[in-house]
Length: 478
View (tube, rainbow, N blue to C red):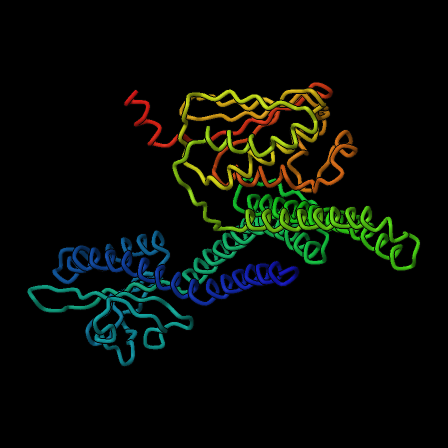
């Protein structure tokens, strides 16, 4: 397409011009000639009938003399640029507008046959060899008392008709040439509006096929080609971002797996070569177990995130009491909170609040948010879990008063493996996948999650859920 499309279109344009010329030169001359012949013969035939019914019939009825008729016919022949003759049925020339006849030496037209016209009223030829050049002849009878007394023959040279045909054909060629030149506008339009944009798109696809997804191009058009170019640009941008994310993902996974594996290998080798004495085995084996737990947690998180990203994931939605799930989840952190002397304050909207969602996955959302809040909260602080209802939506808030998130990093916290600079010292065993899993679960429910954070003051996560119809019935009963 890079080269042949334009050549094909140009070839089609040239073929169009060639066939147009062939058509005009083949059919138009004959059609024009026939049209002019019919038109001229019709006019001559009408004049012949008029002469036959007036001057000629008056001559044969002795109503006028030959000289008077000759004068009138001569004037008509000059006006019509034609030769007018009166011919007897025997072929004797009675009168000729172009010459004076000698009555003592009559002119006889050899083999004169008025039936030469057959079903037509005109003929083209030399009229029984009486003309050197080809002439158009019309013939009409002169009748008197229901008898044919003679014939009016009007001859006009075919040279004038051929000249008119040539002039009209010349006009046709000029018109065809003008149309051919005007059709260049279509070629120019095709070049500017179709070929050049397609060439850009083709080149871009070649660059993308070579792996250069960061190549950008622009097509200034509001039609389908412009839309195609925009979609192609967007597709390449998304693929480029996906590749960048994939590289980052692999780098992060490699890093997070390599660190605990390096620790495990180091401690085990130290035990084997005697660097670590037997009496210290318990301490370092405990570290190894903790590192294996970290690897297990990372693996489970990756599997969970992969399942959540799988298209067509089925949520096991049921109606359940979100208040009870919040209480149970908060209770599961009682031991951890005691170690850091952190209190969890639960402020719920009513005793029960039924929602329609996947209970297990929403419980995982609450677990991850609470685990995150405890990690980054200071000792002797309070984590507040609160529910509220607004515009047919239930909002669940998990708020801590910990280290907070820098403003420019808030939009990145849901990215996989992302850890803010402030959290790296506190989240040594974290995988950086917890908030990504939270985001995927909430998105799977077609709900929203937002974060509000102030560096040094704390962070609040708020996500929405849809109240169930069971909750509506309970509200009516109350």
